[in-house]
Length: 140
Length: 385
Image 1 (cartoon, each protein chain N blue to C red):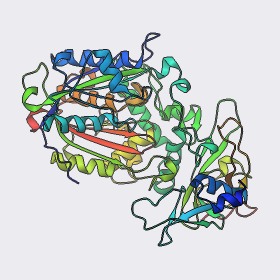
Image 2 (image 1 turned 60 degrees about the vertical axis):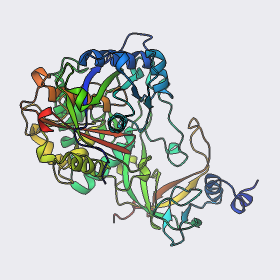
Image 3 (image 1 turned 45 degrees about the horizontal axis):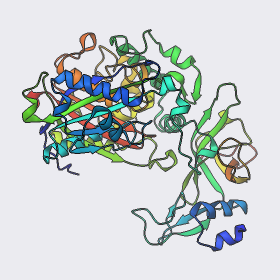
Image 4 (image 1 turned 90 degrees about the vertical axis):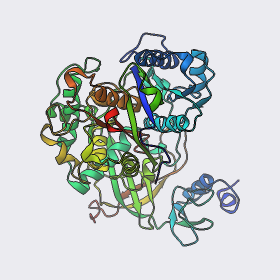
């Protein structure tokens, strides 16, 4: 099945999400009132109305929370929660800058990384983020 | 909002730990659960023949009530292995009270066991794969709490020094508890200088990794009056599940303890100002701050200032986690049962050097997952009913 077939089919929410990522897109869902839902689901959670439909994010967001992980004997790396401008939140990481300098409020832009590191039990594409401007982005 | 349960209708009458720390090679999860049950029954003077309700949870056992019933030779009228992480045992207390009140059982045991230290943590705790989080390699669960800490520091100016005060207070209590794993003093400077795990949390901001288990015995208030120990009455219970994964937590600085605490206080007819001793699940230094705020001991955002200057250490203004907690007493993975055991012992006046004087009421708060499930129990002596 090609990614286009997946987008047109009754594939799983995860398969559709990944098919969008393969096209360089960060997809999310909205309910009938246009309110965002993330992670993708087969049906809307309580408090949301009607069927879920898919949207593609403009890819811009703000760092909501951040940590630097220091595994024994390995380089440090960033893990962050990103608030997308469309109103949903996801876990990701900010790259292209020192992990310790990733700050809450930093404006970031999504880029799809096609393979994550081996050993994670999965090699699917994932959304990662870079600072929005060359100076590291403006804090909100 | 109402729990549908009756204040003071059931009591915790027996408590015990199993072997703790690093247990003998080959001891299993069910060995430790059974050891806890036998000791807790001996504590109150009941026997296995009296038990008709079995409640159990364990991270290493898929069917812990079944395993425990086989081991003990029990065919109880009621069993329950509700699993919501480290807060499971507070919810078992609520479910056991419901069963006792409804006449489904009369004597319930609640049990836990873990061999995560001796068996090796990675071996015993396979993580569920979450395709929206796992690829980013968060150090679960520490990184989730670190993300929440980053928000608390950003929004409220909480400092790493204030977080470290929680670890230091826990250590000071642990030094008064012969059963505690940690035996040497700890300073704020040492916490700050320890190995960073997931910024801003160092290894000393994180709970221990030990083996251990324990059990509680519950029965009706009527039967509780005729047993070996002073009964500890269940005055209030409450629970709240707000999310599972940290990326789905509605507000990283506010936990479901707001709701679980409010339910438990309402049922108990008490508020934070009425509580003599506070036991909250300290998986990380941050969680103590969050629960002091969310259970009403200080305002939101003021937890850091509240714990500063030894305020929750021995001799401070509020006794918190008097066993030494998950940070310094021990942490086999699901600490909730030990939170309850310590609250009961304080109310029975059995805590020796760490005993809080005039202790009539206690709050025992459990946390599960990554701030995901919150369950609160308010307890009191017979005089409070």
